[in-house]
Image 1 (cartoon, rainbow, N blue to C red):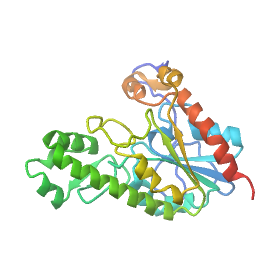
Image 2 (image 1 turned 45 degrees about the vertical axis):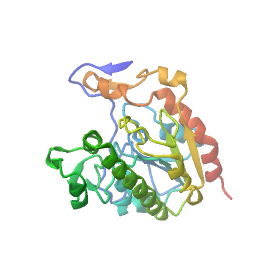
Image 3 (image 1 turned 180 degrees about the horizontal axis):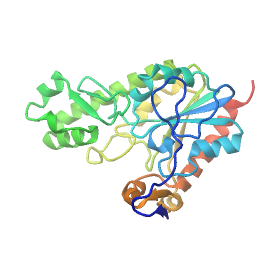
Length: 278
């Protein structure tokens, strides 16, 4: 385990911007006037507490610049609602899109912050009608909202989950239409995609995503890569991570440095094939 004393900072992420996007991404900043691979995703792509996340490992291995466009808690909306960022993505030689969960995006039931997609903004009139017995003013984050609604009514919650899943497939399809370069979809999680999501496990990520939902996108991408870290990688825990003492609980929830090595290995061959001149 690697950590700094309480009160000192942890890992320096060298935050930077690309193009005209207002979002601060992980640096050091890479040049985008030459060949590069774009990596879209959430905290796993960003590499929270990880000195060398998988985009950086692949840059060293393949010799092509990796532009890390991961953002903690990013859902589909973080990318789809940022046209300036999509202009950067369109210039890449290839894109790796780590599959996001379905909870952090606006839908018919509630809206989220356009960049901080885990922030719950407002319940729609439809959600207020379905859950008349819930006071929505107490919620600030989507997972807290969903946990409370599940505990209120499993039957009504199932209706909400189905809406989120349908909206996710449609929204992911929209995002892919804005990416005119080869795309690899990446499942990078501590479990396989499940045909039926367990509503008791709302702490899972990517949340609510089933194999059927991924299959609905297969003909729109150049491949789907599944990487579930090995038992040995999971056992490493926070070994090699860099974090302050206050960040230790959050670091323990992240996939290990060894897991990043494994996902880089899984991506290397397919990505090399997309980057090869044709």
